[in-house]
Length: 191
Image (cartoon, rainbow, N blue to C red; front, side):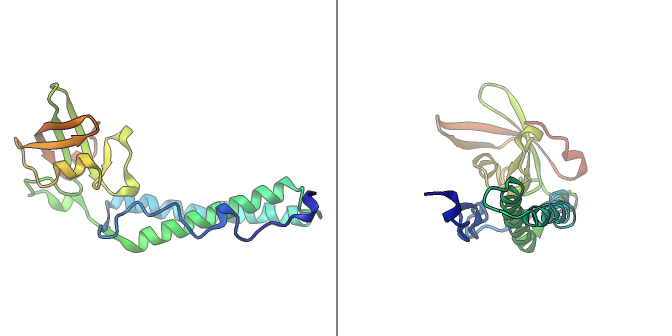
């Protein structure tokens, strides 16, 4: 069948209202640090004020050129608009459900909770430092792990010198808590 007789569907796979799946379990709160919250807001603002208007302009120009079925600028632009709109919906939902937790306000805590930077030792003697952050902030290259990750869940509520069990694909591993920090001095954790 010729492309001329096919029409762009309103329900193409990338046009669904599915925002990439919700990474949070139904019962979990969307905890986020002030830094993570600001990053989500900045991304949303950039998409709405900068990127989307530029793509709309290109799509409008491409549509005015006539035949849309073989117009790459038009087809790519429409696809990009769907991607932007999907990301905007996702970010909006995340920001609406965000529970802001500032680790600087948790200085007196002696246990591991959201926002903590934890140094732990593995059985092989290696030490690792991770910061427990929101799901959307996780970046292992910066030592930031989601507070819902298996490592974070094993560390939760532990104290310095506690030994906790971490379930890994290769079995159960004992890890020992070496240090717990909160606040700005904790932000420089490495994995």
